[in-house]
Length: 76
Image (cartoon, rainbow, N blue to C red; front, side):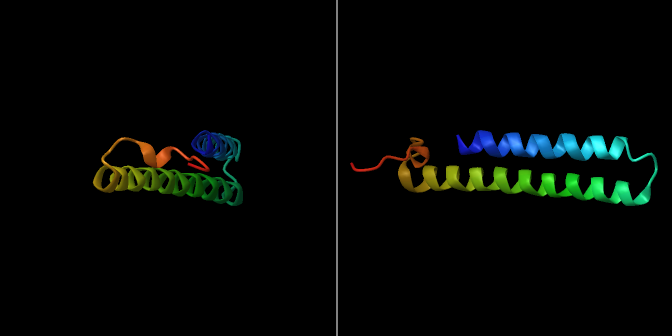
């Protein structure tokens, strides 16, 4: 569920950054702000993908690759 919220937030950031870039009308200040939004959205996407891949690698190497690293259970 957290992954879905992260992907949704990143998508919204991309849409807002793209909209601001398209509607900047050549204003350098607005273009810089829109590029900043897009840059941070891309950095967030890279962090999200890299953390997901690191967790999958840990799962394969140490837990047998059964996907149990993403199952959170309390009180077993």
